[in-house]
Length: 421
Image (cartoon, rainbow, N blue to C red; front, side, top):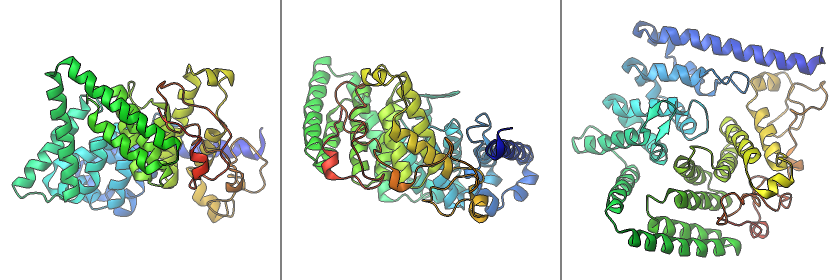
Protein backbone atom coordinates (compact mmCIF):
# COMPACT_ATOMS: atom_id res chain seq x y z
CA UNK A 1 0.00 0.00 0.00
CA UNK A 2 1.50 3.31 -1.09
CA UNK A 3 4.23 1.75 -3.19
CA UNK A 4 7.98 2.10 -2.86
CA UNK A 5 7.86 5.63 -1.48
CA UNK A 6 5.61 4.64 1.43
CA UNK A 7 7.81 1.63 2.19
CA UNK A 8 10.87 3.86 2.16
CA UNK A 9 9.26 6.25 4.62
CA UNK A 10 8.33 3.36 6.92
CA UNK A 11 11.89 2.04 6.73
CA UNK A 12 13.29 5.44 7.62
CA UNK A 13 10.96 5.81 10.59
CA UNK A 14 11.76 2.34 11.92
CA UNK A 15 15.51 2.78 11.41
CA UNK A 16 15.36 6.09 13.25
CA UNK A 17 13.49 4.47 16.14
CA UNK A 18 15.99 1.61 16.27
CA UNK A 19 18.86 4.08 16.43
CA UNK A 20 17.18 6.07 19.20
CA UNK A 21 16.51 2.91 21.24
CA UNK A 22 20.11 1.77 20.77
CA UNK A 23 21.42 5.13 21.97
CA UNK A 24 19.10 4.99 24.97
CA UNK A 25 20.48 1.56 25.89
CA UNK A 26 24.07 2.78 25.54
CA UNK A 27 23.07 5.78 27.65
CA UNK A 28 22.16 3.41 30.50
CA UNK A 29 25.66 1.91 30.39
CA UNK A 30 27.24 5.37 30.20
CA UNK A 31 25.97 6.14 33.71
CA UNK A 32 28.43 3.51 35.00
CA UNK A 33 32.05 4.75 35.00
CA UNK A 34 33.41 1.27 34.27
CA UNK A 35 31.67 1.27 30.87
CA UNK A 36 32.77 4.76 29.77
CA UNK A 37 36.10 3.63 28.22
CA UNK A 38 34.15 1.26 25.96
CA UNK A 39 31.62 3.94 25.00
CA UNK A 40 34.07 6.83 24.54
CA UNK A 41 35.74 5.68 21.33
CA UNK A 42 36.69 8.74 19.23
CA UNK A 43 35.26 7.23 16.02
CA UNK A 44 31.91 6.74 17.82
CA UNK A 45 31.82 10.02 19.73
CA UNK A 46 32.37 12.14 16.62
CA UNK A 47 29.20 10.70 15.06
CA UNK A 48 26.93 11.33 18.03
CA UNK A 49 26.00 14.99 17.30
CA UNK A 50 24.70 13.90 13.89
CA UNK A 51 22.52 11.15 15.35
CA UNK A 52 19.10 12.65 15.99
CA UNK A 53 15.56 11.40 16.09
CA UNK A 54 14.63 13.39 13.03
CA UNK A 55 11.17 14.87 12.62
CA UNK A 56 9.60 11.48 13.43
CA UNK A 57 11.19 10.85 16.84
CA UNK A 58 11.35 14.39 18.16
CA UNK A 59 10.92 13.15 21.75
CA UNK A 60 14.26 11.33 21.72
CA UNK A 61 17.44 13.27 22.65
CA UNK A 62 19.35 10.59 20.71
CA UNK A 63 23.05 11.42 20.26
CA UNK A 64 23.09 14.71 22.18
CA UNK A 65 21.42 12.96 25.15
CA UNK A 66 24.19 10.37 25.26
CA UNK A 67 26.85 13.09 24.96
CA UNK A 68 25.31 14.90 27.92
CA UNK A 69 25.50 11.74 30.04
CA UNK A 70 29.13 11.23 28.99
CA UNK A 71 30.07 14.86 29.76
CA UNK A 72 28.44 14.63 33.17
CA UNK A 73 31.27 12.34 34.31
CA UNK A 74 34.91 13.39 34.52
CA UNK A 75 36.04 10.20 32.74
CA UNK A 76 33.85 11.12 29.77
CA UNK A 77 34.79 14.79 29.48
CA UNK A 78 38.41 14.07 28.55
CA UNK A 79 37.66 12.10 25.34
CA UNK A 80 34.96 14.60 24.32
CA UNK A 81 37.25 17.61 24.81
CA UNK A 82 39.91 15.92 22.69
CA UNK A 83 37.61 15.95 19.64
CA UNK A 84 37.38 19.52 18.25
CA UNK A 85 34.63 18.40 15.86
CA UNK A 86 32.39 17.46 18.77
CA UNK A 87 32.91 20.83 20.47
CA UNK A 88 32.04 22.63 17.24
CA UNK A 89 28.89 20.50 16.88
CA UNK A 90 27.89 21.20 20.50
CA UNK A 91 28.25 24.94 19.84
CA UNK A 92 26.03 24.64 16.75
CA UNK A 93 23.33 22.73 18.65
CA UNK A 94 23.52 25.23 21.52
CA UNK A 95 22.95 28.05 19.00
CA UNK A 96 20.00 26.36 17.31
CA UNK A 97 16.27 25.91 17.90
CA UNK A 98 16.79 22.21 18.62
CA UNK A 99 14.55 20.95 21.45
CA UNK A 100 17.70 19.61 23.08
CA UNK A 101 19.55 22.93 22.95
CA UNK A 102 19.91 22.96 26.73
CA UNK A 103 21.76 19.62 26.66
CA UNK A 104 24.47 21.06 24.43
CA UNK A 105 24.75 24.09 26.73
CA UNK A 106 25.11 21.77 29.74
CA UNK A 107 27.93 19.89 28.00
CA UNK A 108 29.82 23.09 27.21
CA UNK A 109 29.43 24.43 30.75
CA UNK A 110 30.65 21.18 32.34
CA UNK A 111 33.65 21.08 30.02
CA UNK A 112 34.55 24.65 30.98
CA UNK A 113 34.15 23.99 34.69
CA UNK A 114 36.54 21.02 34.56
CA UNK A 115 40.16 22.29 34.91
CA UNK A 116 41.43 19.29 32.92
CA UNK A 117 39.28 20.09 29.85
CA UNK A 118 38.68 23.86 30.08
CA UNK A 119 41.86 24.85 28.22
CA UNK A 120 41.00 22.51 25.34
CA UNK A 121 37.53 23.90 24.64
CA UNK A 122 37.46 27.47 25.94
CA UNK A 123 38.30 29.33 22.70
CA UNK A 124 35.59 27.45 20.79
CA UNK A 125 32.95 27.33 23.53
CA UNK A 126 33.06 30.92 24.80
CA UNK A 127 31.78 32.69 21.63
CA UNK A 128 28.70 30.45 21.55
CA UNK A 129 27.99 30.84 25.27
CA UNK A 130 28.39 34.63 25.14
CA UNK A 131 25.68 34.72 22.47
CA UNK A 132 23.41 32.69 24.76
CA UNK A 133 23.98 34.69 27.94
CA UNK A 134 20.67 36.59 27.63
CA UNK A 135 18.57 33.43 28.01
CA UNK A 136 16.53 33.63 31.18
CA UNK A 137 14.58 30.35 31.14
CA UNK A 138 15.14 27.34 28.89
CA UNK A 139 13.01 24.32 29.74
CA UNK A 140 13.61 23.44 33.38
CA UNK A 141 16.70 25.65 33.49
CA UNK A 142 15.98 28.82 35.45
CA UNK A 143 18.31 31.83 35.11
CA UNK A 144 20.41 29.95 32.56
CA UNK A 145 22.04 33.20 31.42
CA UNK A 146 23.28 33.83 34.95
CA UNK A 147 24.73 30.32 35.09
CA UNK A 148 26.58 30.94 31.84
CA UNK A 149 27.88 34.28 33.15
CA UNK A 150 29.13 32.70 36.38
CA UNK A 151 31.05 30.00 34.51
CA UNK A 152 32.64 32.56 32.18
CA UNK A 153 33.63 34.69 35.17
CA UNK A 154 35.33 31.64 36.68
CA UNK A 155 37.26 31.24 33.43
CA UNK A 156 38.58 34.81 33.74
CA UNK A 157 39.49 34.28 37.39
CA UNK A 158 41.20 30.96 36.74
CA UNK A 159 43.40 32.67 34.16
CA UNK A 160 44.77 34.80 36.98
CA UNK A 161 45.81 31.65 38.86
CA UNK A 162 47.58 30.33 35.78
CA UNK A 163 45.23 27.35 35.29
CA UNK A 164 43.93 28.49 31.91
CA UNK A 165 45.32 30.46 29.02
CA UNK A 166 42.75 32.62 27.25
CA UNK A 167 43.28 34.09 23.81
CA UNK A 168 42.89 37.86 23.62
CA UNK A 169 39.71 37.51 21.56
CA UNK A 170 38.12 35.12 24.08
CA UNK A 171 39.03 37.41 26.95
CA UNK A 172 37.55 40.42 25.12
CA UNK A 173 34.26 38.58 24.51
CA UNK A 174 33.89 37.65 28.18
CA UNK A 175 34.77 41.16 29.33
CA UNK A 176 32.28 42.63 26.85
CA UNK A 177 29.57 40.46 28.40
CA UNK A 178 30.57 41.46 31.93
CA UNK A 179 30.51 45.14 30.93
CA UNK A 180 27.04 44.67 29.49
CA UNK A 181 25.82 43.30 32.81
CA UNK A 182 27.46 46.23 34.59
CA UNK A 183 25.64 48.63 32.22
CA UNK A 184 22.38 46.98 33.19
CA UNK A 185 23.06 47.65 36.87
CA UNK A 186 23.87 51.29 36.16
CA UNK A 187 20.71 51.72 34.13
CA UNK A 188 18.58 50.62 37.08
CA UNK A 189 19.73 53.71 38.96
CA UNK A 190 19.48 56.10 35.98
CA UNK A 191 16.58 58.56 35.68
CA UNK A 192 13.95 57.48 33.17
CA UNK A 193 14.48 60.67 31.17
CA UNK A 194 18.13 59.75 30.56
CA UNK A 195 17.15 56.27 29.42
CA UNK A 196 14.59 57.75 27.01
CA UNK A 197 17.28 60.05 25.58
CA UNK A 198 19.63 57.09 25.02
CA UNK A 199 16.83 55.10 23.40
CA UNK A 200 15.92 58.01 21.12
CA UNK A 201 19.57 58.45 20.09
CA UNK A 202 19.79 54.74 19.28
CA UNK A 203 16.65 55.03 17.16
CA UNK A 204 18.12 57.90 15.13
CA UNK A 205 21.28 55.90 14.42
CA UNK A 206 19.23 52.82 13.56
CA UNK A 207 17.23 54.78 11.00
CA UNK A 208 20.51 55.99 9.50
CA UNK A 209 21.49 52.33 9.21
CA UNK A 210 18.19 51.51 7.51
CA UNK A 211 18.81 54.28 5.00
CA UNK A 212 22.29 52.97 4.22
CA UNK A 213 20.91 49.44 3.88
CA UNK A 214 18.24 50.60 1.43
CA UNK A 215 20.87 52.38 -0.67
CA UNK A 216 22.96 49.19 -0.86
CA UNK A 217 25.69 50.23 1.60
CA UNK A 218 25.51 47.05 3.67
CA UNK A 219 28.85 47.48 5.47
CA UNK A 220 27.90 51.02 6.46
CA UNK A 221 24.53 49.83 7.72
CA UNK A 222 26.16 47.14 9.86
CA UNK A 223 28.40 49.75 11.49
CA UNK A 224 25.38 51.95 12.23
CA UNK A 225 23.53 49.05 13.87
CA UNK A 226 26.62 48.38 16.00
CA UNK A 227 26.68 52.06 16.99
CA UNK A 228 22.98 51.91 17.85
CA UNK A 229 23.56 48.82 20.03
CA UNK A 230 26.22 50.71 21.96
CA UNK A 231 23.72 53.52 22.61
CA UNK A 232 20.59 51.46 23.21
CA UNK A 233 19.87 50.70 26.90
CA UNK A 234 20.58 47.05 27.76
CA UNK A 235 17.16 46.80 29.38
CA UNK A 236 15.44 47.79 26.08
CA UNK A 237 15.27 44.19 24.92
CA UNK A 238 12.69 44.65 22.19
CA UNK A 239 14.77 47.34 20.49
CA UNK A 240 17.97 45.30 20.83
CA UNK A 241 16.28 42.28 19.23
CA UNK A 242 15.63 44.40 16.14
CA UNK A 243 19.17 45.81 16.05
CA UNK A 244 20.84 42.40 16.37
CA UNK A 245 18.51 40.94 13.76
CA UNK A 246 19.17 43.84 11.36
CA UNK A 247 22.91 43.41 11.77
CA UNK A 248 22.54 39.66 11.20
CA UNK A 249 20.91 40.45 7.85
CA UNK A 250 23.88 42.64 6.94
CA UNK A 251 26.35 39.88 7.83
CA UNK A 252 24.30 37.47 5.75
CA UNK A 253 24.49 39.65 2.66
CA UNK A 254 28.20 40.27 3.27
CA UNK A 255 28.77 36.51 3.18
CA UNK A 256 29.67 36.32 6.88
CA UNK A 257 27.55 33.40 8.10
CA UNK A 258 29.27 32.94 11.48
CA UNK A 259 28.64 36.57 12.42
CA UNK A 260 25.06 36.28 11.14
CA UNK A 261 24.49 33.22 13.34
CA UNK A 262 25.93 35.05 16.35
CA UNK A 263 23.69 38.11 15.95
CA UNK A 264 20.57 36.13 15.06
CA UNK A 265 21.14 33.93 18.13
CA UNK A 266 21.44 36.99 20.36
CA UNK A 267 18.19 38.36 18.96
CA UNK A 268 16.42 35.04 19.53
CA UNK A 269 17.70 34.82 23.12
CA UNK A 270 16.48 38.34 23.91
CA UNK A 271 13.10 37.77 22.31
CA UNK A 272 10.08 36.83 24.36
CA UNK A 273 9.17 34.04 23.87
CA UNK A 274 12.61 32.54 23.39
CA UNK A 275 13.60 31.44 19.85
CA UNK A 276 10.43 32.84 18.29
CA UNK A 277 11.57 35.95 16.39
CA UNK A 278 10.59 34.97 12.86
CA UNK A 279 13.03 37.09 10.87
CA UNK A 280 15.99 36.05 13.04
CA UNK A 281 15.04 32.40 12.58
CA UNK A 282 14.99 32.80 8.82
CA UNK A 283 18.29 34.67 8.75
CA UNK A 284 19.99 32.04 10.90
CA UNK A 285 18.51 29.26 8.77
CA UNK A 286 20.15 30.83 5.71
CA UNK A 287 23.46 31.30 7.52
CA UNK A 288 23.52 27.64 8.58
CA UNK A 289 22.69 26.73 5.00
CA UNK A 290 25.77 28.66 3.84
CA UNK A 291 27.88 26.53 6.21
CA UNK A 292 26.28 23.30 5.03
CA UNK A 293 24.70 22.58 8.44
CA UNK A 294 21.47 21.02 7.23
CA UNK A 295 19.87 19.98 10.52
CA UNK A 296 20.33 23.36 12.22
CA UNK A 297 19.07 25.16 9.10
CA UNK A 298 16.08 22.81 8.82
CA UNK A 299 14.96 23.30 12.43
CA UNK A 300 15.16 27.09 12.16
CA UNK A 301 13.31 27.08 8.83
CA UNK A 302 10.51 24.90 10.21
CA UNK A 303 10.13 27.12 13.26
CA UNK A 304 10.11 30.17 10.96
CA UNK A 305 7.25 28.67 8.96
CA UNK A 306 5.39 27.98 12.19
CA UNK A 307 5.82 31.61 13.24
CA UNK A 308 4.64 32.72 9.79
CA UNK A 309 1.42 30.74 10.16
CA UNK A 310 0.69 32.36 13.54
CA UNK A 311 1.57 35.91 12.52
CA UNK A 312 -1.01 38.69 12.46
CA UNK A 313 0.74 40.29 9.51
CA UNK A 314 -1.90 41.33 6.90
CA UNK A 315 0.26 40.15 4.00
CA UNK A 316 0.26 36.65 5.44
CA UNK A 317 -3.47 36.64 6.02
CA UNK A 318 -3.96 37.59 2.37
CA UNK A 319 -1.97 34.52 1.43
CA UNK A 320 -4.24 32.42 3.64
CA UNK A 321 -1.23 31.34 5.69
CA UNK A 322 0.44 29.82 2.66
CA UNK A 323 4.02 28.75 3.34
CA UNK A 324 6.41 31.13 1.52
CA UNK A 325 7.92 29.43 -1.52
CA UNK A 326 11.48 30.25 -0.53
CA UNK A 327 11.00 28.68 2.93
CA UNK A 328 9.42 25.57 1.44
CA UNK A 329 12.36 25.17 -0.92
CA UNK A 330 14.89 25.48 1.88
CA UNK A 331 13.03 22.99 4.08
CA UNK A 332 12.92 20.42 1.28
CA UNK A 333 16.59 20.94 0.52
CA UNK A 334 17.59 20.44 4.15
CA UNK A 335 15.29 17.46 4.67
CA UNK A 336 17.10 15.78 1.84
CA UNK A 337 20.54 16.75 3.17
CA UNK A 338 19.70 15.55 6.71
CA UNK A 339 18.08 12.35 5.44
CA UNK A 340 18.95 9.30 7.55
CA UNK A 341 19.71 7.12 4.52
CA UNK A 342 21.60 9.76 2.56
CA UNK A 343 25.02 8.10 2.83
CA UNK A 344 23.59 4.73 1.82
CA UNK A 345 21.73 6.30 -1.10
CA UNK A 346 24.91 7.98 -2.35
CA UNK A 347 26.81 4.71 -1.98
CA UNK A 348 24.23 2.77 -3.98
CA UNK A 349 23.58 5.43 -6.59
CA UNK A 350 20.29 6.83 -5.30
CA UNK A 351 21.82 10.29 -4.84
CA UNK A 352 24.59 11.26 -7.23
CA UNK A 353 25.98 14.36 -5.57
CA UNK A 354 25.14 17.12 -3.11
CA UNK A 355 23.49 19.37 -5.66
CA UNK A 356 21.67 16.63 -7.55
CA UNK A 357 17.94 17.06 -7.94
CA UNK A 358 17.21 13.35 -8.21
CA UNK A 359 14.77 11.66 -5.91
CA UNK A 360 16.07 11.16 -2.39
CA UNK A 361 14.80 7.62 -2.13
CA UNK A 362 16.31 6.40 -5.38
CA UNK A 363 15.92 6.78 -9.10
CA UNK A 364 12.79 4.70 -9.58
CA UNK A 365 10.38 6.51 -7.28
CA UNK A 366 8.08 9.17 -8.63
CA UNK A 367 8.13 12.87 -7.80
CA UNK A 368 6.85 13.69 -4.35
CA UNK A 369 6.64 16.46 -1.78
CA UNK A 370 9.97 15.25 -0.42
CA UNK A 371 11.86 15.99 -3.61
CA UNK A 372 14.25 18.93 -3.47
CA UNK A 373 14.39 21.59 -6.16
CA UNK A 374 17.64 21.63 -8.11
CA UNK A 375 20.04 24.51 -7.61
CA UNK A 376 19.10 25.89 -11.02
CA UNK A 377 15.45 26.05 -9.95
CA UNK A 378 16.06 27.91 -6.72
CA UNK A 379 14.63 31.38 -7.07
CA UNK A 380 13.68 33.76 -4.29
CA UNK A 381 15.48 32.76 -1.11
CA UNK A 382 13.54 35.15 1.05
CA UNK A 383 16.25 37.73 1.50
CA UNK A 384 14.09 40.45 0.01
CA UNK A 385 11.30 39.41 2.34
CA UNK A 386 13.67 39.18 5.27
CA UNK A 387 15.52 42.36 4.45
CA UNK A 388 16.11 45.12 6.93
CA UNK A 389 13.17 45.40 9.32
CA UNK A 390 10.82 48.34 9.66
CA UNK A 391 9.46 49.69 12.94
CA UNK A 392 6.59 47.23 12.98
CA UNK A 393 8.03 43.89 14.03
CA UNK A 394 5.19 42.01 12.31
CA UNK A 395 5.58 43.75 8.96
CA UNK A 396 8.20 41.29 7.88
CA UNK A 397 7.21 39.55 4.68
CA UNK A 398 6.87 41.57 1.51
CA UNK A 399 7.92 41.54 -2.13
CA UNK A 400 7.82 37.74 -2.31
CA UNK A 401 9.22 36.24 -5.48
CA UNK A 402 11.46 39.10 -6.62
CA UNK A 403 14.85 37.41 -6.12
CA UNK A 404 16.31 35.18 -8.82
CA UNK A 405 19.79 34.53 -7.45
CA UNK A 406 21.00 31.51 -5.51
CA UNK A 407 21.29 31.20 -1.75
CA UNK A 408 24.92 32.22 -1.47
CA UNK A 409 25.11 34.92 -4.14
CA UNK A 410 23.10 38.00 -3.15
CA UNK A 411 23.14 40.75 -5.78
CA UNK A 412 23.47 44.42 -4.85
CA UNK A 413 20.63 45.45 -7.13
CA UNK A 414 18.35 42.98 -5.32
CA UNK A 415 19.51 44.05 -1.86
CA UNK A 416 17.99 47.47 -2.49
CA UNK A 417 14.54 45.91 -2.32
CA UNK A 418 15.22 44.84 1.29
CA UNK A 419 14.34 46.88 4.34
CA UNK A 420 15.14 46.66 8.02
CA UNK A 421 13.11 47.26 11.10
